[in-house]
Image (tube, rainbow, N blue to C red):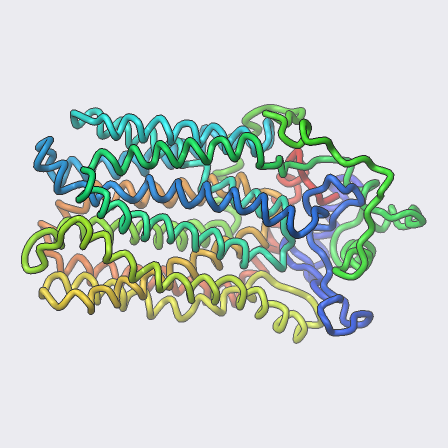
Length: 542
């Protein structure tokens, strides 16, 4: 097998195939009916490889992931519906409540650094179980809150527990699904994120009015308890590591080992053609794992627990696709925090005088907007890359996903201005709902595309990369939320939203330089990526 240095040198002199560039379709041998799709990552012949699972098995496992995502974002985003009653009963100020939200985001940032390195060492299952347990404990604490210290520490714990959600899901998607499915799966993730973030407050508003604010957390305790049991007994481990090179060659292909050990175009041809949707080899002599092994509490891999702690920093600052995803995804999610906090602070008072359920119902609008957003940013984006790849000789470039991002540079500032200026001038609430709905459309669609672009460019290090992405997102959210009230008091609600709209407009124009120079940037990062990927215990690239 070629050494890492030899592989890197080969990739360095083959500008056609920097990290992320793949041959997506066999246009010469396919029938044009979808059977010509070349599978990436290349699956092994092992029936236990998650890439080889039957479709129903993949979807059942992913359904548990989506339930976990839904509940995580419910508990992270329902607290503002209880603010009015908490202020009355416990005397908390708006600044203290905003501070609790900011501490939750701080927990999200710190938790990703603490827990995500355990994924490759111990497996995905223990992280899902740990996260669910921490969130269950945080919800118990929140339900019994009496002081500001209770509120802040419980929110910090909730953030620590929820931190895994924003990274492990993308790793699970990479474990189980192929490149041409990534945007669709990320769209499901974003859709269930939006469902939890938007519909959770709707239900919470009614609970606050009918049962009191503490019961929104007791219901979370019940739901997390059920979800934890399902993860423990039904969710299969998706971490997979094996001697990939020998396993992925079908019988009679031994003479292709040397070719399979290379990188670049030749590697794609030698391995990819044998692994299309219509031509896949499964070695039935390899026994399937029994239920006990599939539900093992941990799946330990040799190597250090935390690896190189600087890898997350390197990916964030030296891989442009990761930098882009961090800035874009982070800005959109931080903007969501701003809009929900401002809405909660202003719509309880005149001229709206909304009840807790009324404020919660405002979140129906962005949820409705997230439905077409997830469809366009997911399924249609995956279909679009096939069309663009065919025009490019069957070769897929990750930047092909970014064309769908350009309308977001106009729609997002418009949604911010409709909501912010609408609150300032006291316009009718249905117009505010339209603005909020437009933002929901962008959050689901643009978030999915940004994550898929990062995954497609640097798939083997996406777990490490997501640490930097989520840390950036939470730094932005924490900074903005702590500064939110002083900032609005200093310049006013109108000027605040104008500034935010201008900033998000500039940020969402970042796809333009990537469409022009993104491939060149990936080409320059090939050596660093190959070196980092080869250190991953679950690396599939030889």
